[in-house]
Image (cartoon, rainbow, N blue to C red; front, side, top):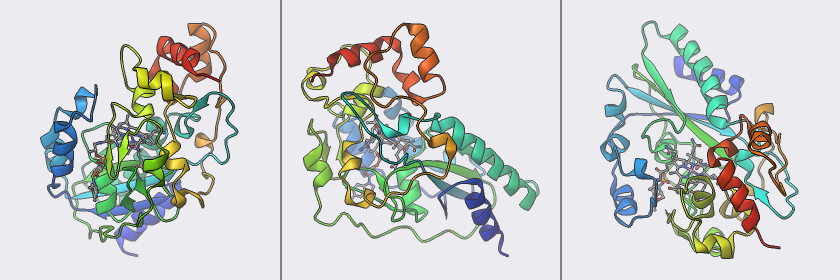
Amino acid sequence: MEKRERIRNKALELGFSRIGFTIPEKIKGDFLLDWISRGAEAGMAYMRRNIHLRLNPKEIFPPVKTIISLAVNYYPGDVNYRRTKISRYALARDYHRVMKKMMKKLFSFIKEEFAGVEGRFFVDSAPVLEREIARKAGLGWIGKNTMLITREYGSWVFLGEIFISVELPPDEPFRENYCGTCNRCIEACPTGALKPYFLDARLCLSYITVEHKGEIPEIYREKNRGWVFGCDICQEVCPWNRKARITALEDFLPRIDPSPEGVGSEGDFRRTYRGTPVMRAGFEKFKKLLTLVKG
Ligand code: B12
């Protein structure tokens, strides 16, 4: 069997849902420069740094000849939300850790296949345009909600990449776009953060609840719709997510209450959310957001 197919099979066996191969060529960066020039990255200063690295994957790891793009379905099934809501991606074990472990195993396999291969693997951990790379590797298209959408699992997938120093034949990039005339995500976003293929983080509930530091903006107080960590509205309404299938990975099954009413002490917060993405908010901010949910 061809080596690329052996890697593909191994990835599926390890629990990845999709895998694709692409070449580390320069990425046309107009959309990223436009996004930054409009201030849409809000307080995420790291998005303004290293733009040249995001557009030139080769500079991140000069020996790279092939980028392997990987997607994992994390859809946890129906979540019965009550008054407050933690987004689906954060109900389980932190995906950075889970995917890194899986990628480490896949890279060990690749090392057995190619003596002397060098590589690096990333999940959110380097200046990489993960969605665009996934599209180029054939995994899916970038939707109007800016999500990478796969035909099989919708947008409920995390992305990661392995950069390797050997050349493998690339997959065909995904050139179609199946959003058509649908604008449900744009219409459903309560804060108006979305325009087609453009997200203004300053208004995005996910940004405000996960990344934003300092005073909570007024728009959150008015329009939070119960979201206290992350937000799934633009994915919940997407027709491509109707046929989502429950994740095959136990690590991604919910392990916390999706609708907490309170948080207790800082120690309670740590005990409850240890190992989940919610830790990123920090105790004070999470506690504050819980008090700002109306209804
Ligand atoms: C910064 C960031 C955020 C920011 C900004 C999001 C954003 N849309 O840019 C905030 C905090 C808001 C955020 C929120 C979320 N995030 Co986030 N985030 C990132 C991060 C670190 C960088 C994204 C980035 O570079 N943004 C800059 C913009 C310009 O680029 P882009 O989003 O990649 O896509 C643009 C281009 O590809 C271009 N483009 C491509 N094709 C086309 C075609 C046309 C016609 C046009 C005009 C443009 C265009 O337009 C896209 C939109 O501007 C990535 C990890 C990574 N390193 O890539 C995760 C990542 C994108 N996030 C992820 C997730 C899961 C989320 C949330 C779902 C979490 C949640 N439930 O709250 C939400 C979704 C909100 C949303 N609709 O995007 C996943 C997405 C997986 C997927 N299937 O797409 C990623 C890939 C992390 C991972 N490793 O899995 N995130």
